[in-house]
Image (cartoon, rainbow, N blue to C red; front, side, top):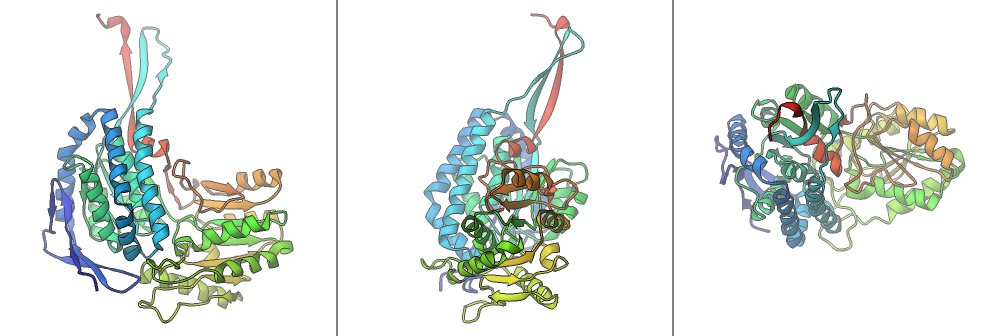
Length: 485
């Protein structure tokens, strides 16, 4: 058994305990072992972090753009140099296979490189003036202190989306990660500090809802970035008030497979979306809407993919799926399967938790047929390794079923027809639609976020869109006729 680590929070230029002295443990879902003991913050700690970020904001904002870009590249270099160690701890704490963790760490480094390049190209405009004696120009400036709250499913990748753009844009940050992946949050913070991020520019606090509420609602923070559930996202929005928001919330991605689709492509992409990261992706293939002509072939292919997956310890080379991260997500998967069966669905493979593993969080891949449109699978995000097949008669019924859900993040459609591809893409109420590709596909540069009127978020992550969200636009009007020199 490995030695339990004792770690701290980062506030200002110091690693600190919580004011109360309270602690919590982060436990490996793979082994059940305690990995680290960390400070449990309260409002007092959150306020101290906000004050530290406030003291650093002018220094960060005054750092020239090209120096901030170099700093982002330096962070990427440190992350790359520690890739194997980061991936190992990420696997043990989050539960995903080592190979997936390696990919996530590489993705995080690339996000910092992209932010460094994007901020150097942060162009603004000159607006024609009705008054010939005036010139109107625009510039982008930092918000100030940005509150960032991130989840456990991609505990290096998702924080890096916000942290890279926030720092590139000249902001200081107060970051609250998910408690179940607090160890890897410390490691990412170490990477930023060792790359030369100024003291106070990155502040790391742990804790529960009261800490999140404090950093969101406190007048010392000026913008909010949050990735998580729709319910918590709505609470964040209420607490934030009129602050600028970047919210990436839950999804329940519909995957539509039409009868003219390339079935090998469709099955591969759909299975990836169902089972990658054990289905714990906001853009998973959560609902699979299939026409009758291809139903049996799709079902057979998904079963074949599910049965080829090796469930096991995330650090074992042959493992292709690790455990779920926590009991809450495992219980929700149990509930959604039970609900579908009560409504007449049939488990083709899987059906419940795996036995014979160190924890109860190991969940084999599931394929469930005959799922009804009124099931929880079709109405809520599951976040587990399940492929629920929902029969639909035609394209229009598929769109009706897909759009009946009150979430609208990512979806996909598989078809050989360009006309049907555009027909579905333009009518799916999702912020992102991938054609002949898994809904889980994203390269980090494509604008990514929820559809208006649905519960999947506000604003856009991805490339320059993140930089825009984490800076503010200022207009400057200059009366040139009264300027001397």
